[in-house]
Length: 430
Ligand code: TTP
Ligand code: MG
Ligand code: MG
Image (cartoon, rainbow, N blue to C red; front, side, top):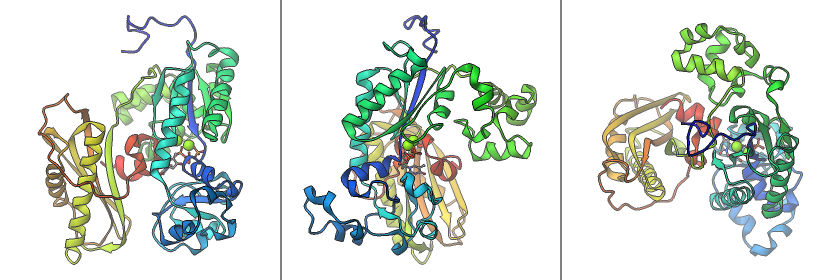
């Protein structure tokens, strides 16, 4: 039920103004707060914490971090390993470096870029801080991932001024004052268009889009800019000769339904015409939680059985810990493998009852593992828990105690839908 049709939320007399706010180069910008001497330089975030990172910090007290000379920072040209870039500063992006690119490849494009590891605790702290700042100004905020939210401007005082630009400016300024970080905001009649608009003027920009501007500003964009059209649907549309949103809008609705099925086909037609009634919801529930790890060297299921087993168990324990900490239980457990030739295999299994128990997750994930080929060596292993409900809303087996091992968290766990990297690899395959 949308707020418009719910008697508890009488329809506003005012036209809908919905904002989408996304932080600029978020992980990198958080690091630049710590190291302001790197402002304006190409910086990439990626890989785990390495010995060079420890060396950089050794001998420098916390207060002196901003005085570490730029020459002392590790450079991409010296990077050896299999890390992937999570994000890059805008100065680095000019060299063609960006999210999801292998670090060794990026080093060829921009060897002089500085490399820093991700500090998830710091990222989460700033994520909470910028979201709390927004909620003080506009109460109806929907979480959309670690660095983005939707905000309903419709009934906020001043939310209609200049189509929403005035309030967007106020929020931008408040976030900057609280955190020192910049963000970009799109304001439009709905979430679909707002999400696109927030990218129009990045970084530190505001874009206001009116329904009448659909043809001029939205139809020329590629179909993949629609939130919900992933690589698979994008490829299929390209195969039909449909590249832009305008071309999609020109399609016969029935034709799209016959190609993509009743609900997807009809949805595509609606969104191409800029139509989206979905409400800004106060709390968004996570779709899934996952953990994955890329090995230092490729591992073989037989020769490296013990090591693989240990890693696999740890991933399951981490997924269980994530579920328990956030108060969710899962009904689907899945695995992801990436082979040495980079091909991906995924399997999942639906359970009779929900669980957040490490042992049970390990058992089901192990059964999934039996359904994939293990002839080739493996590069990556992942475990995913899906079909989540809040604990207490399902018949559940009581979670047993487990040891929370440390390891790499996937930033997307909080809201995977916002990370193209994981959509390609993890989510869509599952
Ligand atoms: P994004 O908002 O997609 O990117 P960004 O904030 O770095 O840059 P932009 O200015 O274009 O918005 O993602 C937010 C953070 O999520 C990003 O800083 C790092 C992380 N992330 C990943 O870990 N993997 C990914 O593939 C992507 C795209 C992002
Ligand atoms: Mg961002
Ligand atoms: Mg984002």
